[in-house]
Image 1 (tube, one colour):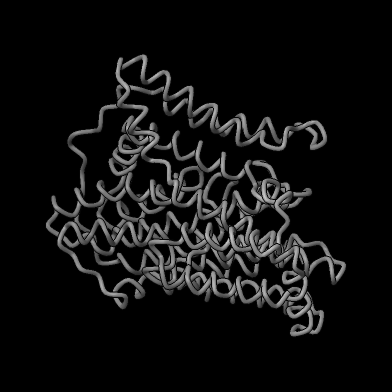
Image 2 (cartoon, rainbow, N blue to C red):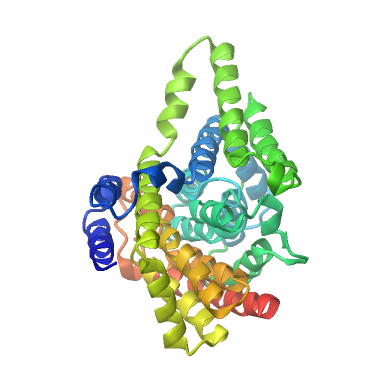
Length: 423
């Protein structure tokens, strides 16, 4: 156990110290767990959640085709056309980014919506900094709303056996989707304060033209099929059902685009957009976590949580939520959530309670909490990168003037609502 714990802590330190080499670190650590005999070779393949990896890869490919079709830009144009001034145009774009990111990767959402905000800012001669920050943090907020909204949601779905509909209604009660929406509603009040002085009129002269609606059908089809798959009894479902749906529809989209254009450009472009770095990172982490579980480390950490809280469920829930906010403000929430899911299961098992409240608390803190700092979420880093290209260097202080009240409002609302529903 001591060897496994030391290796695990060293892995985490290196993940923090070498952000550009996280996949290499995770895979190297996974190899050491096997070589040192902590995790038997026979358990390596089954340690990796292939369903999760296939869902992420397939969804990324479909999203790439969706973005290329320009449908998101058209939707943004239609929304802005209904808004009276800059204040409501930016708030509506932020809310739109949130809705899109409930079904599409957060980074992809920022890349879709941010250019629209830049265009508005250039036309009116105003700084785009606040608007891009609002779009980034709003897209990150909604990642926990659905099964396909973020990698952390997919991880929870795989670990807890949750399907698409479970994020809306779970065991007859409101699911995470509604908790996130309440958080979004409360945090929108913060955005109204931020943009209260931006009252310049805005208009859209040239609407985006969409010539190919098939990628939109693919994305909607993915959601529909994931919903239908949720009705298949667990004992009759192939373990990688959701993954096969996402990868299958991505392949259909690529083949159709190749035939339509008579070119392999679509294949290269779509496959290039898949984040292999994250997939390899997760594969390595799955093996590492299986290793520390095999060695008894997860059980020991779970018992420590129970001991610190005095077996009080409310204290453990509170600790999980706000510790997750703090950690996710500085480290990537993917390895954090992947590590903590088995710990929350262990805590619930030791205490003999339903783990749902702990799962939802973990995801609320880790996903919504990533908005606290500029480095807490990939969407934030992407948004600041776009601003940098436009010549706007944004300090942590400037970012956090918006992100801190926004995050605290969203997390507090989610923290209270989760407890009221699942206590």
